[in-house]
Image (cartoon, rainbow, N blue to C red; front, top):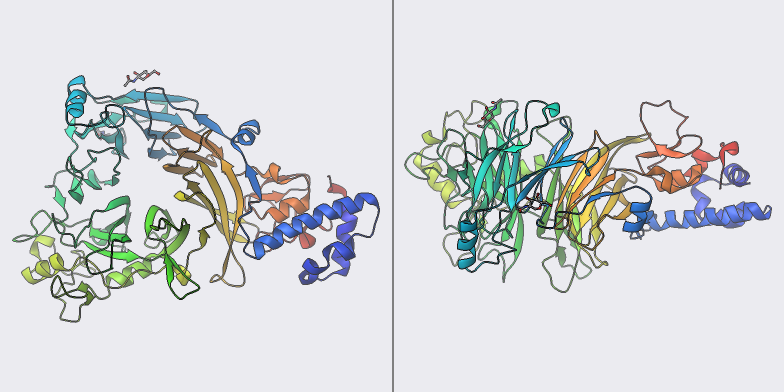
Length: 604
Ligand SMILES: *[C@@H]1O[C@H](CO)[C@@H](O)[C@H](O)[C@H]1NC(C)=O
Ligand SMILES: *[C@@H]1O[C@H](CO)[C@@H](O)[C@H](O)[C@H]1NC(C)=O
């Protein structure tokens, strides 16, 4: 039987030589063993494919129908009068997923999204008519598309929508406790949403709400030309990036915003924005997009004589995600699509995952690159990009940098000054004309951790889960695509951490029709993934171990860090369970060492 087959090979063949010898030496038994071994050989070939880098074949590929029939997806198919389920806010404590859409905000139960509450927040007839008269599309544009949805305080959320090309914001009451069951728009109090939500529903806002202040990267005008990073709300005067200066921002598309501490002193806290934008003139021949990371200090209140109510600590750097081509020309993935921050024990150093696509019309490709914050900080401490005039080249600035160094936060740690309003004039003048760094940020190991080029889809979203397995911790990526599928990928170190092998575990279709996945959240508490698109919202478990098969070897070969062979089935692995009772081998996917003694459990 199966285990005999294993035992036999286990005893006679060295682990390393298994690949060459498998079918010949192992299968010299009865018909049953032969079938088993044939099957075994197929699995090993699959494994070999991964190792040769032919990892386009997922271990499991599940159609929408298969996902439904195996109870692996729950979908909310949208309301007839709504769409654009793009703005997600996860609240694990209350066990809710808030979703901003067209004219509505939803509060879904994380356990099952079929259970939800909704707020209807349309625009008035007058607004809609004004929008129509301005030449906009009544269905696609003249509605209230929710673009900002943030936790405000213990009892309220803050929400902003496009308001039919007239952005508006307000608070949403959610109560003190989940049991309060409150979900209500504060409709007595609307605020102007300019600089918070874009006018045009096609544009996005990257936003962050901390300490009652809203940071948002968005377009602040009807035409969608005045892009800026703003801080609004709260007691201070609103503050923004310099206007009409393409060196600061050049037709950007904002992706996300994050607070990352720089030291143990909160005065050094910085807000980072991820975006893509047109390359600055002279930086590149022709029209090109660059992926960017931008920084500002949380305690930046603008300059005193110059840069009044403008950021004085804004700096940006290019993010590179590229692979060397055969002809010595690098293939660049410059169209930043999404960013995920994987927090580590040290809050100052999350790992940054970025999803990129190419700008080329001929060559369709996607990549995932990983960046370290220490590399980002090194670039911000390096040379500023400088040029003497419009017809000059950009060069690293060689002259004297004024003190305190532009980009440093006012604090006792580094700066030795109290407020950006105290900054000397030469610092402000320099900051204004040198917002970009000369050196780019390269990814960890100088190359993407994953590339997909030979497929007819592109990556759009990413979330990452850190999973404890028997042989270590693994980051499992869930990647959303523009055809409504989710890829589950694990990167596994081969010899060292510098040599990662990516294994495509699952490819799942989560929407009935091909549709772009535009939002994703992962709940570690619920062990569920939530996915948004124009058509609706879908919910799926992070793992479905039983589908890998009914034998230890299949479970082991799957190399899914969530799953292990428990003696009778492939099931969720919990690191607390006793060693040796669970069989799992993510690093090598080698069932010989892990399953060969399990004679009595083999089931085909
Ligand atoms: C959309 O339809 C739902 C019922 O399906 C209704 O409750 C809601 O008020 C409608 N929204 C608008 C903006 O008319
Ligand atoms: C939260 O903010 C809202 C809106 O400003 C306010 O009405 C409410 O009292 C605040 N709640 C708490 C607990 O501070």
